[in-house]
Length: 202
Image (cartoon, rainbow, N blue to C red; front, side, top):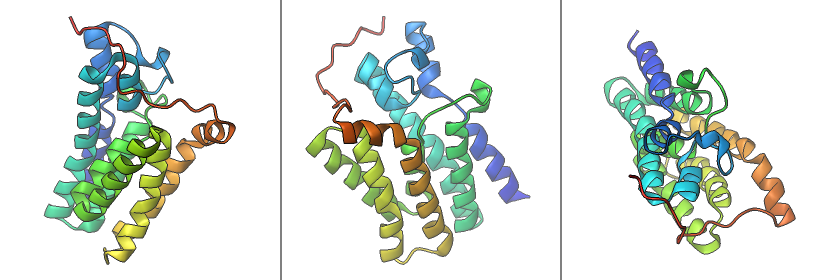
């Protein structure tokens, strides 16, 4: 029963579309009609700058971290993995957006791994930051960070639920970036610009 409640809580938390909500609140606009149309922090940051993008990244990470951490602490690694997976599913298909397309789960997955396997999550974060700073492609950084998760989980001797979760999460994240892969191959993927003109929040 506890695990089932954690899974439900994870899905509800994951379904909270912070990118959509914060842009609506501060800009009165629909982020899904801006930039790439994604509700995640990268698109919000690109379109509106760090003042909106950073809070979205943090909140999307926390909604993966909280259920995974509580599940792993109160029940088991498996419960934490299932709760974190539910949060990722909620982010991809949010209840609060009537199950329409959500985000690509990168920040939420990172939060889930920080909750259930902190060292694995830290490896993923380091890979993401390193690749992003070198190439400035958020999509490439996200995919390589995702691929690093099952490798790190296996090398660090994590439990089988964590290793399986890492492999499935990596596959899902790469699949959701298939359009980005095509643009990377054709040389049309947009590089992230740190200095981006952004409107004030007033």
